[in-house]
Image (tube, rainbow, N blue to C red; front, top):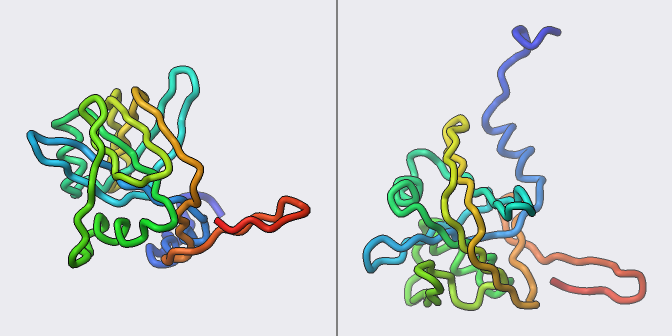
Length: 170
């Protein structure tokens, strides 16, 4: 069948199939004036070692996409397994009583308690369907050895790895 005659991909089927890809969970932040803005995102990946580049994919209609265009900088906080409420909060489902704390380093905010921190200057923005891809040159890195928050089939999960002689729970 030629590409022109293939039936269109059903968006719900696409979403269900893509949810089978396990991902970590991040909160993307930017500082606009005195305010820290954050958004949960799992559309994040490493692009290059030389130079160090990462990419975050945001809906064109998202508030964060507009903010990143204006600020030109973002932080990525890789969430630890005890930060599920933070993920929900920054995904637009505010958690009553949750008061997220941020550490600021070189003008970029990171969610306190995260297990990875990546600071970036936006170097390119690419349209991709209904999203924008923000390519960032890494300006700051930090990490801790904690357990990650994992997302699979639309829910948070525990990560298990068999190293041969012991079972690790992440």
